[in-house]
Image (cartoon, rainbow, N blue to C red; front, side):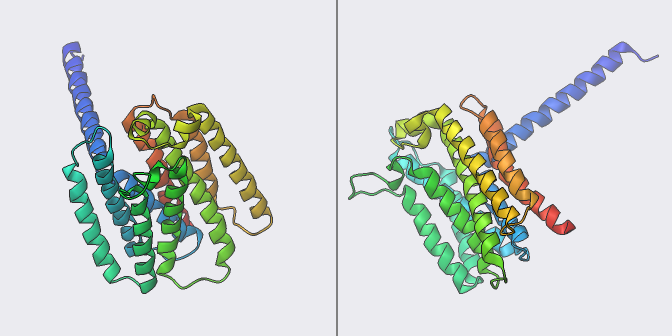
Length: 298
């Protein structure tokens, strides 16, 4: 017969081991989030979606370029935010370090990239940095202080990059424009929803920093209802275009819209930050992995 004390001791050791692993997992994920590694993976994952839906070969250089470009841009934006926040705060050393790492990798990747890729990444990177850079001679301190511009700017930049960079490594396939337009529409809406969700989470900080995001302007509930409406219109337009034969019925489109709907319904200002980051940017990573799996089965 098993000694109850031995069984209890074994369960206690198992519980302690589980607690240690859980704490380690939370710490590791928090480390990745703070250093923009997780969100950069989300951006790069959308490049995988592009490759699968447009039927172009997976190019590791294009995905790496997306990842490290996002890492550098987000890290530089952290530096801008620290210097312009009220009250002003110290620039995180990690942001400077990851800026240097990201830029070095991007420069090496661009050296071996096609000319069209170099132009796209260079011009696109400057546009992205211009969004958060200080404007000492203008009435506004930076462009992100234009009311409501944040979601449009970031979603447009991410959509352009995650479609344009993989395509810039490939010749233009026959019959691509229709599918490319459908992909751009879905990626833009999914990314726009993601940005607005983070603006809901960061509502107080953005208001304090003078960045009038959509939730600051119309409130959390109205922002959520607006996102539900945008996602419903996107689903309707996608179904119409698919029935007309202009866009495919690829499952990744519908999973992306579905995950966005669930995110809007479940995430809010009270959601713990790690859970919020895990789900919101994790949904983009899920889309990328799903597209690779489905692409390998096709």
